[in-house]
Image (cartoon, rainbow, N blue to C red; front, side):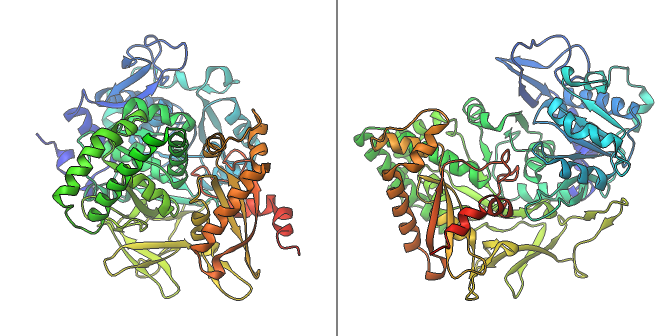
Length: 627
């Protein structure tokens, strides 16, 4: 069975057409699930605030909407936003966690022809003000009191066009428009007929870069960009029909916009919202997803947690697990070379997987994983090989907001090389310039950056090539290998170029070291700031009989413990043994406090803000160069 909307090629599709198709062909399939707040009931007012009545299927504290219900909810929400004056082409700012109000509003605004613009919840006031000025939105939709504190002052700024704020949480409205009132009125038939009129070249969203090296820039993406990328990804990924997705990364990040909104519409898949990213492990255990995406730091933290648990097991059990992981890595190595594993190895792997590996993975909800992926920053090969030992091959990918997400990826279908970021997807071409900078062109390369006058400034050259700012190389088989960001490369006083990410990943190979920053621009040698891993360090200490303080002082106590410091010294020496002389660390400082978005050292997508860290620890870095 096909409809006009489902028969169109990707270049002629739009997101509303896909939503209409899903509501017709997959009306009763689950589309969106979320956890009810404590004390909430399944009846009464809809949890997305769109009106009374049916709230979807209630499953043990989870609420689910079907694709038919999603289309009906977004129709009413679109009418509500239209009543507030939102029209075709208008930008609307969203600052909420991954909750149904956010997800449904995003689709409702697109159906209206408006352009949703999500802002990171951890954005500084000056970043919020910059984005509001740049996109010239008149309406912002925010979660609660914490977000109101950022947005209310902008209502009085003459340089910011913001006129009205919609607030989701009832206790934080303060005279502003309540989200629960949106879409309460009956939807006129003529309004519904006028919906979904967007064209493939119309803007779908503006995604602001996370600002690791300067002010965020607004990347304009249209329906054609997004759906071409979705089609290209489906060519290289093997997934079950209507696959589930755990949505926990911020919607302001292109990865979650693709994985959590656009690809589910393209695939008619099932999104599970996780409003608090720290709770994603519990959601994984419940959902047991077939696919899981995590930026490198997420995979690193998961690996550290698993290592910590394994270190506490009896020696006999540890030996059995080590044997199983060796078999799994050998099996993966054959697949990586494009070889069929020998029958004897295939049999041994099947046995070890069933008897040892799957029970371990099942405890964490990872036993059904058929596609595991990462992107955003270079992944440590040690972490990749750790997971390969459990039969989980992390398909590392690479791309930018400006390339609508993934431009290259490893694939279980078309081939993979551990440590690389794969080969170009069909929607783009990739080349490496003479200075090592990676360049991309194709149907998923963005329209340009949004200017404050509403126009879009192109960022490609006359032949359509985009300079990405990343350094890398293409091997003879077409696989791309990342080196580092061009702006982040360290140039020593002797003129040697060093990739800080390469050195940092070598240092993080030891489970005690969770985070590392390498420093040495215009210096004669490199130094490093090291941070103990919050999950692995306590387990390591317990396994080595170290008494530690409890509470907030625990990590500081471990960082000062002589046995821990000696082990970190050995970890640095082991990393140096893997590096050439220019890349080696001469001195380091061990820190106890983990870096994060809330304290400003990481972006919301968990990439390091190197400038911020260098400024924060300027004294400590300076002392590492003192004689």
